[in-house]
Image 1 (cartoon, one colour):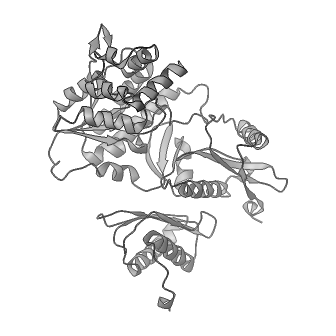
Image 2 (cartoon, chains in turn orange, cyan):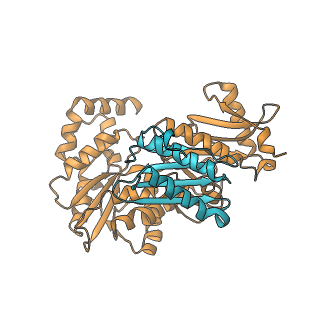
Length: 347
Length: 97
């Protein structure tokens, strides 16, 4: 008799310490070390109610899959994915995603996922076939043919004169410039405000189009680490995957041939991003253009510098050298003051 | 009929098929099939899919089919259920032969 039929499905209640510990112990046996952000978990259990396979999720990302050796080939993964996908859809997310090692990509393809892009090490899959290309194609306009089209991705946490300068310089080098604002809400400044500030702060530049980044920007926060080994360089894996997603799924839908970035003298991770893009993008006919950052007081203007100064007690008015008027104005609003307050609290 | 919302019917369990329908306004039909029996039954599954979509007069949709060896009448039923959910319409029992 087929083994899978003996197994019962059981939700793992993460709010109950005993159940969570049981899940973590099972993952530990599979050498997986989940980040502490799981919001839903499900398992298959045997007659003794022991976990023999599990999977979990955080928002749209399905993760922490593990199946006991003797169950492989019994479609245990299919049952877990089925359950997690249904849960996601009930929560209103119709396009759950998976980041996994490249050799496991076909396993998820057999469960109805489509590969968006992959590197030698990791791949991104999504539930809606061609979702990434369709997402990007919505930003295409009928008269875009034959134009020089460029792109920038920014978090703008918050929008500074540095961002403004980067957009101006880039916009001068192309006919259409797409600016994608990182949508994930794990920054001090909420996405809606970051997007609005970039929109308002660039509204005078006729060839600039500002868009939400959607789920297709693989940020440090999105990239799951549970399956990494100690020898893996998470930053390289994450940034190369991000570059692949951009090059394979987003850029072709919009005929993007130029990607602009600021040079990065201070932040190691952003520097790694730029190096990964330099490796990946030219393979797809996309040129990476690095634009030197503008400085103020002999230091590059960056959002992290702005946040540091705000948390140390600087008022928005004192940061006039670093911030465009739209951002200063926002920081004076009630919502802006609350963000400054929280910055000072968490300092 | 218009696909008003994403909809799913069926599971990934053995002998079933999971049908997902997503809106695709103005861009026609995009049908993606994954099947453990694609070589033998791929064409027949796609034929059934197009027939059911035609019955519902669905002309714009992304349809994802993940087949785990379902019989044709299972495929047809899952498709009908997904179409009803996606178009927010009730199934026409009188239309069955």
